[in-house]
Figure: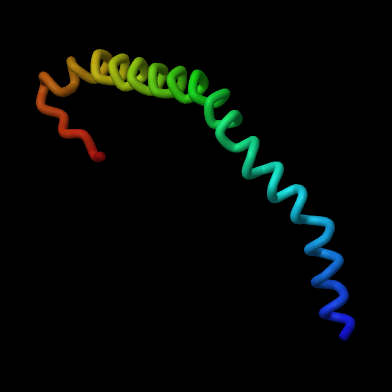
Length: 66
């Protein structure tokens, strides 16, 4: 019986938070889009710089380990 009462208390306390998270998730996703685009841009920039710096070694025959 105690477990059942604890489950009821948990349900009463958590359903508003779950509903709020469900309603706010699309807005949080939209707010995170610019940061994702910045992350993709920096990842591409670092990959480009790595390729430029490793070009002389690759021209001399070094094979990458990855």
